[in-house]
Length: 258
Length: 259
Image: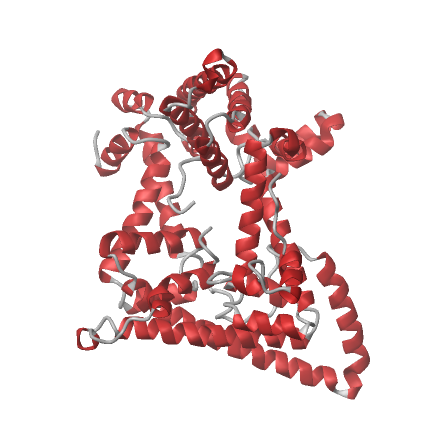
């Protein structure tokens, strides 16, 4: 079974024993929420592909949602590529292919009815309305299909929410604050969410102040990176932090490349 | 008749995966390359870049890859993101100022009771809020962008042009033959082309899609049977990987390089 790390474990470990699971260690050069959420989803995909017996609920969700988003489909496919004996992804994709095939062969107009179609419009709303009443027993399932939400995206969002809630709650602890201030902090998308989540003004101000310090430091490094590209400054030592600063600027703006 | 867009489509039919996904990615990458090659210091491009706080996640990392592939460097990224970081700083300072003002208001005696209620409500709401979809109501520019990712807009524009051309050229027999030889459209693009094309060509599009889906289903079934057979001990072959790739590409579209 894949162990899924949580910020709780991280914070507890950090408090008692600053070993390899401390926030500081874990978040080296990365937004901790991006890192943990991504590891969680990767863990889920590994479980799904390697241990199909333990991922019944997830497979059921996948079947109900009639597919996953493109990004996660490719992740599942690659995970299976890396294994030589797994057939889970093939089974899932075969089921989805057969469903799409059945829809097309039965003459259902794909643009209106396909569960793979994620568009909106009056005709689609009408079709959903009509289907709703024509199959009252399948209402719940149809509702899930109509939403077409990727279960792996949902898991990712849940994980992000869980870690951010923990992070904001832990801000009351002075030691946790110090550790957070020493780390590279959250990326901008997660900072926005954390500011929204923060229960009081003091936590919001703390988050904004630390983010400001991180941005000032990053801005200085990125300016130095550009300045040292000038021929006249070619002999100046190029520091690792400066060399990494363009990469970290992107990671700050949009989240880690996971 | 051949025009430039049709020529592009003809070329894309020979590529792996969905031809329209391929053309969209190609256009997006070309746009990013052009910006890095000659518009890094252009005022208009920079203003647009800062207004959207850089590109979206997918295209921001795509930009990074393109710059490293072509220049082995991050100078264009550094130059452009310097302005974005400056804007982030302004946004954070405005936010802190707003929050301090709110704090002062909350501490005033006349509003103490109201603030207490608000804090209580805020705490209760924070327990149930769905984080990712929600943005705080009063975040200033610099913490949130003003416009959408420019590369996404370029991609959508490209999609519209090629979908229109594709739908128009379906009446040309040669074009239909070229398309039939390709790996076929992905489902999201098939839906869009079906909506844009004349009813008389919809059967053809559905027929081709059925052929491709059926071929993918056969390949996947073969792979599954192979695992159940005595040959199971053998490592999975390139043929199986290709079969899976084609199936995923037809169902969901081509993968982004940054995934």
